[in-house]
Structure formats: C-alpha cells, structure tokens
Amino acid sequence: MELGHILNNDQSREELDEILDETARMKALFQIAPGRRYLRDVLKDKVIVLLFNQPSTRTREKFELAAKYLGSNVIVITEVAYTSVVKGESWRNTIKTHARLGADAIVIRHPQNFMPHQAARFCDQLHFKTRVINAGDGNNFHPTQTIGDLFTLKEHFGEKFGKEILNVAIGADLRNARVLHSLVAGLAQYPVKLTLVSWPTFQLPRKYLGPLIENKRVRVLKETEKLREKFDLIYWVRLQTEHLEKDFREGLRRKYNQDFRVDRKFLKIFLEDNGIFMHPGPRAGEIDDNIDRDPRVKDGDQVENGVFNSMALFKMMLNPRFYIPQTSET
Ligand code: CP
Image 1 (cartoon, protein in one colour):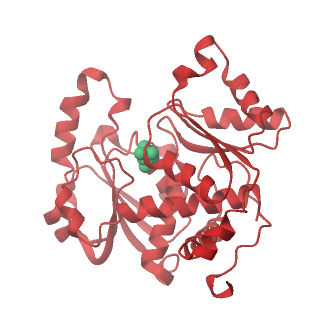
Image 2 (cartoon, protein in one colour; image 1 turned 180 degrees about the vertical axis):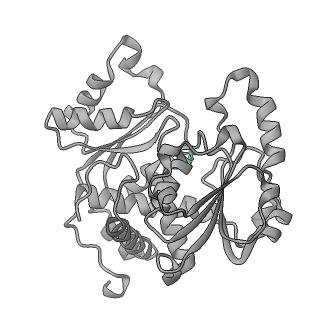
Image 3 (cartoon, rainbow, N blue to C red; image 1 turned 90 degrees about the horizontal axis):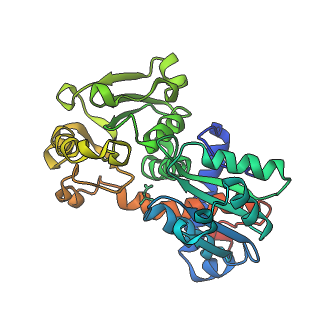
C-alpha cells in the first residue's frame, strides 16, 4: 500500500491494520544488527524536511530518528526566526522552496490549524510529488501520535485489540488537545466504548466525535468523581495552556492538576489489572511521577514505538515497494 499525505485520522481500518503490521516488522528488524543495516537503504537519497514552527521533543525526535535509521537526508528547521519567513516569505512560497530543493516529504508542526493541509494542497497544485505529514496543527489534529498509539495498544492487547470491546476513559482537556481529537477518530475504527471526562467548558467539540456518537458508544462525564468502573485503557493529557489567555493559564493549570490528577490510588481504583495507562506527553503536573513504577503505565512505550511507526509511515509513503522481511527470514 502506498500512503499519500497524512493530514487527518481518516485512514480506514484496513489501512491502519496494514500500517500497524509494517510497524511491527520495522520494530522486529531494528532489534538485530543485520536488520538495522538493511533498513538503511529504505530511504537512500531521499530528502525529508522537518518544519517545526512550534515546540516539540518526542514528535520531532521520532521523525528525525526514523528518517536517519532509514538512510534519508534530513533537514531540521526548529527556529522560524532564522528562516526567510521573517523577511515576509509566504507559506506557499516556503513550501514551494522546500519542494524545489528536493523534499520528498515535509513533516509540519504548526500553531495554526490546517497549515499542513494547505501545504499539501500547494504541493498537489504545483505538481510536486512531495508528501506532507501533519505533526500537529493548532488544536486540530495530531494524526501520527494516534497511529503510533494504536500500535502500542495492539502490542499490549494482542489479538483482543480489534476483536473485543475495549472500555476506554479519556481525559481531560478534550477541547484543545489535538492528540485526543485524533485519538477519538482513530479509536472509532475499532470496537471501543468511550467515557470522556472533562470540565463542561473543556468538552470534546462535537465535530470530532464522528461515528462514535451515532453508534452511542460514547458517554460524557464532567468530573472524575463520577467514574464508577474500571477501564482497559485510561488515556490522559495535560491542560493545553498554549490555547488559553495568558492571565488564566497558571490558575487554571493548578485547578486542572488537582481535579484531574492521576496517581497510584487513581490507577488502583479505575484501571483493570491487565489494562494500560497512556499519555502522549509532555506531562505538566497532572500526573504523579510515582505511577512510573506501575508496569501498566505505557508512556515510555508510546515514545519508543513512535519511532518504529514513523519508519513504517515514511517507508509506505516514499518507497512502498521496498521489501521488509520478517525477522525469521533474515
Ligand atoms: N506528543 C507530543 O506531541 O509531544 P511533543 O510535543 O514533545 O512532540
């Protein structure tokens, strides 16, 4: 399968399953030295630009490592102040310049919604083959975080994932966390029952609920006190302060970190013994670090799997016919 631009979480169940299988092959091959050497030819002579107009640690690093492990040339731009944008260059001309310089893919993080979508449109209009990956746009979507997270879920739950109904609780800044908008769209392809926990003013905008609401697989709770059961997956995020008025940020963060705090007691009460807790990072005070001793806490796996998932996405996008063997064949 050849992937086009990745802008939203609109992949079908079949496409997602194929990406997760390719991720598993990448991960297995990477564990052995000959496999790592073999992978270095996947993107030989390709050019990947990471255009990060907003801060990032794990997303930028996962894409940079993935591109390098596959042998690509990589250009990383994290300081817009040192690009020609400050001289007045338009978004269209910025994208056109990267494409003319040979970018096979541009990975974009941007504080404004839909800037990666615009970039993809420019590439198509100008007949460039350059592919665009949305690495997080404003408070809209973060599609590759979700695709990588689905892999972590499949890795943990195995055959059960995709066959049996998973009971999932998601909290708590559902209004602004692009990761959660993507997660809800991605999980909608699998059998899940969702409980959404947030303050009334921070609920998930209806446009992101899609088919889940029609199938009545969602219920909305306004406080963690209303939780009454154990979950297979609890997925939590920080308060997205960058989308709040400066004057309210610290006060609201303090309240959020009290109201939606996750600690060992919380996990003991609400997480199934064989369930998992996930968080896309960064943590910003809403999580008690003592939960790290609990093996059900998987945010480290999410970070690590993100690299293998990004390798799979690049390969399926830029060199889909390159053969990735099972480790048993090597
Ligand atoms: N999950 C995530 O997007 O983290 P970064 O902001 O560190 O990339």
